[in-house]
Length: 320
Figure 1 (cartoon, helix red, strand yellow):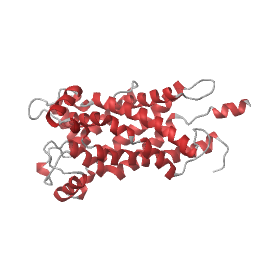
Figure 2: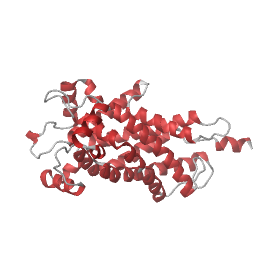
Figure 3: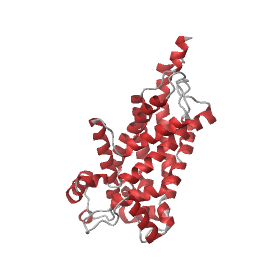
Figure 4: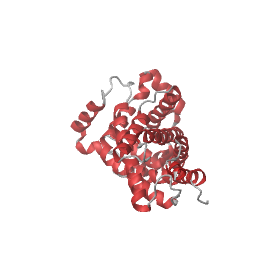
């Protein structure tokens, strides 16, 4: 009996969750980068140059070539790899802290708080020096990715930023080191809310649809993980659309033309609402819904296979 109880309390270690998330992030970035480029262009379009997703994508291909749809892939893939490793690992650590010591179970409130905490850590800062370095690199990649994606034109001499390293150097030179943290406040709100909803929903869908519980040795089929991940990834974009638009605007602006247009998160929300209307705060929602749920489906399909293999190999005696 004691042996059985000790086995049921065993969980997948945070480092395995981190590894599974990082590998899932690489696959996701490679598959869905074009949608992220289109989303960024639509969010930065203040003059109505693009008439929709299809028009935006075709305009980019016609004016800049097919490769332009993968602009910023290197910093984006690096960013996703670090972000998912941090997200999955920190969520596992926080869930362990919220688990009941007797039953080994976590309450719904504890699951939500773990997800929110993981999102905040992912978006802003981690205490230890090594994780703080990873965080800074991740924020750098996000800002650089958006600066690269907003550029238009085929001629190299017309491009303000020649590549990820050159872009980062220009941001630091012109805006200071704090320029790499542009949009931090809305990023914290967006990511915290997103991850609280996503982890809670993923667990709920796994339980309701497939009767899957962590540590039970059951490995979901990739298509099952994709369904759960897709459904879990739908709620966040609708709830956090304004934060995402503001984050993109704050990261994209620079001081080269004089004063900054937006002084912070709340000023940006008020300015966008006054100048462009309420709907502008949800610009890019459709491509986000095209990008995030499929991205979560891909990431979880990879991550669940890795964690599932670990469960069956090390946590149970179930045959492979």
